[in-house]
Length: 472
Image (cartoon, rainbow, N blue to C red):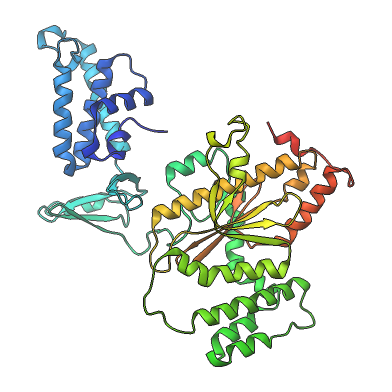
């Protein structure tokens, strides 16, 4: 839940506006009078000034405005009333004590809060970041009290030193840190999305089931369980590590499936041959200029694999380069009275995989969020949100197509998101129950679609509730 003081932490000091602050405070908290609202802002500004000394220039200006308002005859704050107008009773003393206690409580609440410039938006804005461990600010010009206060600091806290106007933060090596180049969402976005999603991802675990599922899939990935199960790991590892570049293609196309290899393993082997051939071509010469445009790496390293997946499986077809995602528009046609101009345009996808079935389900959403050299965090967050939005929209459209099919069968239907950030590729799976990272298995999706169609036309007897039961 938002706090009143968040206005001064989530907006640049240069953009503080007293009218906007009044509106924010009025929305977040109920006040008995305008005087109480002004008094609350006054108290919060004192806390901001204490916690962020660099803001003193701006807090002083804003406090001046607040004091001018408080000194107006029609708006006289109780604590600024003349001495003789306030009876010296135990009631006034307790009220003053309560005010001091509120300020102390607010300070304790912000004890573990620091402000960092927001490298996500790249506009100099800043966010409030709460730390799990106590932080201690030490100025290089005042280190005399360091030894005496060290006994009160929790074990291995981050250490912040200040030289002039620059802060230097030191964390111990054991401090947790987010893995780089992964899909990410802001805390406020996750807080809102948790009303609809159960997450089991790198950036969020919302319940024990998703947490355990993510741990299992993460372990399977680290052990290369899929390639081991298909009897391909040793052969591909030898090919990439031991075979000379000039003999690489001959060795790739001479690879034959062994007698025990499953049909799925044979398909994956054929896909691997085409992917490795494109890999061999892309690395034939060193580029003269390293470009960071997302399309360069996407075309050279990602499209060949997706194209091979499409051609070798035969039930998936891809549309390339800003393909319109129809479900994000068609689902809202009724809200716009069937006038497409009055609703948002369809989202554009870098690569969109369509299932070759009657409904042409939009199954695979692929987004390249950066080039090979540098990640742009804002772009990463936007693409993470886009994949989630499109995944849900696709499932909603399929639910409308199969309203009279079994709900248990529909729960097996998934959409898949692939997000490329620098050299890392993250695969996500979305179902009607939760979102989590796992090894992809597209063959099951085709079988599920066939089963749903048979149940819809009543060729196969439906079991349990219908999909219609979850549509309000």
